Length: 123
Image 1 (tube, helix red, strand yellow):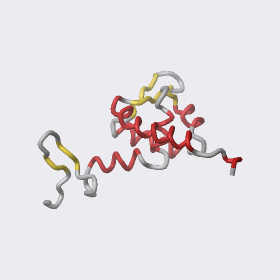
Image 2 (cartoon, one colour):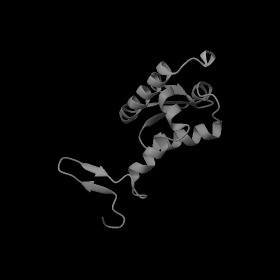
Image 3 (cartoon, helix red, strand yellow):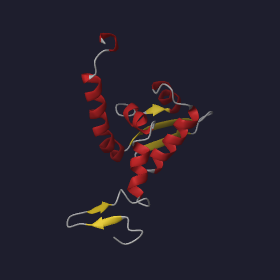
Image 4 (cartoon, helix red, strand yellow):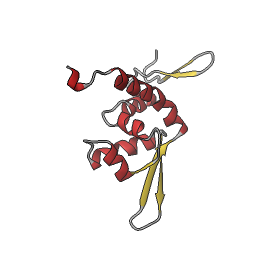
């Protein structure tokens, strides 16, 4: 494969070379599977949330990490951001169609783990 190639033209569709360091799809995968990206997508799966609601729903995340994670997911097109022109501004986040599509298998994985995991006190 030629140096710098990022995708392969197939018969029916274009596929990205995710193992190539310059592949744009690789960045999206990195953002989705980051420590906090998964939790943001799972938290937004059923409802849109304001920033503080997300921060409260994801225990352990700092404001800085939540802001960075949301910025990346918005830029990737997985999350939308709506700013209400109030004082102070009210910012709401939700999943785009792409975000719902990507988040669906993550939700299935999360649900499988929580269903099958033994209760902590039953050790």
